[in-house]
Image 1: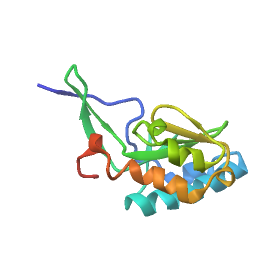
Image 2: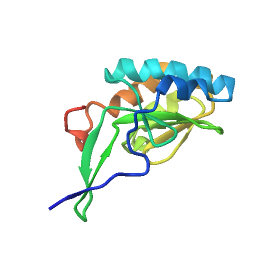
Image 3: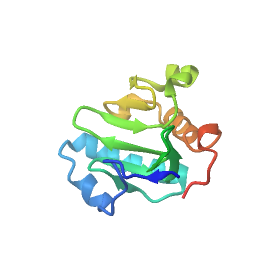
Length: 144
């Protein structure tokens, strides 16, 4: 039988707007406010704080090979000190064509890192975010 576990970065009831207002870097705060709207528009979901610093949209349950179950968000972002981290929850590196048109960025397996939204093409960014929600077989579950 699966054991439901709670991750350190679990969903919380913290106030998203208060979190964004507390971001010290003015440019990062302004970008976070833009991303709040972009992610909401794409996902149709209200933002939630996950852990201490991630703003996530949607939620699903997944099971690890050992049987442990966890909840996680479908997509989201974090306005960190060094950059904006955008959590795509799919291997964003497979999107070579879109990434080549995005603008200044770095990637991790499921993350996209940008210093400023002014450095990227917002239409391309929206396409990448959309791929975290639709057309992704790994998350062929309803967004809750």
